[in-house]
Length: 423
Image (cartoon, rainbow, N blue to C red):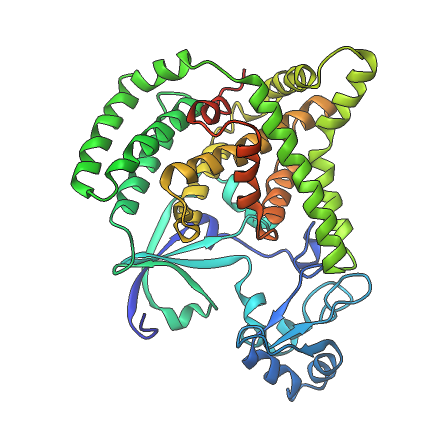
């Protein structure tokens, strides 16, 4: 794509209203994260006229030469913090010589730009706490503003997504349908997700025929509106054991991956970052252990479902006047991930992955609410943010999830839809 050509830039409120809080961040990206330095920034920092910056660079930048974007790396301090931070937690590079002098990694995160046909869409990673708040808490997060700009002015390393020449014809058709279903307020969110999933499952056979796909989705919209899908969802039998097996297996896999990561990464504060995730994912297992001691003959699946259902009532109470939080999450998942087409996923495979992600986080939230007697906004943001961070920093996360589906002795659509039924 020509960097000097003008493009339509679509910016949602969650991107334009995001603000870095720097030293006040509860999970700063300036600690424990491996920071790659691009060639231009590496040379500029090493030879900078500013004595403070030059000294810091010569002491804390190591040469890597892995690629133009990974020409070097920042050597973190023993406590895991970036050595370029001042005593108040703000970046010396940004303060002394400006934003444009930062490594592209630091300029980039958590914002990103994704090409979608003839437009460029601004997005953001919710692995950043402030970004998670911007996406989830604002009822108007998905209000868009449009302007024209050049790609060069965006100043980002990677422009992901698909140009008009590479965008699959089915993708904008399916995305528009999914957006409209998620925003269909006449039915519950669970019913909307079921309608979406059924349409994606059945619609896959038509993705090579855009006209037929549109005709099929028109029927799917009618079935959503007239209650046909809702009736199917209500009549769906629930595989409760699958819920427990899927949750327990995926949780265990996260534990295994974390131990391997800590062993190989040798990052000083990896354990501290992990502890924030543990704070919001262990309550449900602590409750299972406590109740198992009281009811030694009870099966873990029974205790899990008991805690999940009771905790979900408290989660529902918290979300009663905040329905936009989960709706925003689903819209973001669709918008940001572009059906995971870059990972060779089919639309329904994408839906299954999204359903497991949502179920895992709902189960963790239920555990928090049951353990503490209520769910708070702080804990909700901590869960979604740390889960996203774990997901982002684990290259095999999706692959492992699909393996867990297979190891659960079920990979069928009925069981996936069971994850949407909360009680």
